[in-house]
Image (cartoon, rainbow, N blue to C red):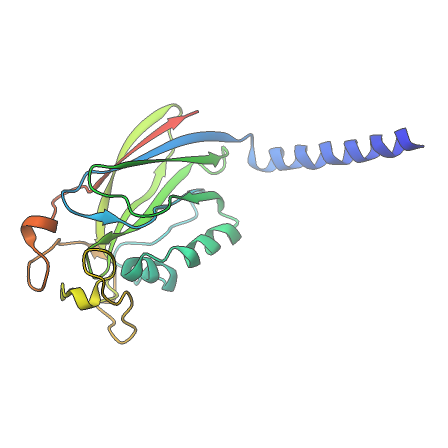
Length: 217
């Protein structure tokens, strides 16, 4: 009888495992290396996810969601991470700890399936009012690939470039501005203008701000 019960349990477990594989396909792991190639920016924890083509972290020209706004203004990834965990479109997500300084790299491991072959990454650039650093909906490679992350203005806070309104070690200001609605939509960041407390020479950028190398393990 014990043997029969054990056989039933093993058969049920195998059946569940088979149904998972039948639905999503076998898992594949990737090493994702992110390098900060900016001159003076620091990146808050980089939230990284594998997902299908039906999912989008944000869309350029549209209003930022509450979770994306929290990242844009204060680098708070907790809300979006929870959304990732509960989404049927996202297979897995991960993130690093602390700040990624200029010239430094971080390695993350991401698991995917043949139904979740898209890669997205999001972070906040410091010191800025509400600048996002993001890689959006890139197709994961069969072996390896290189992508470049761009900077986007979150459109949730006015770019006054005043340290009082910018969090992080560069400025130490207030991270969130609930009474400041900004421009109201996400757009390519114009960089630092030197209008407030920030130096153009020290912090501004042109083009990509991070390099992403993806390797199948």
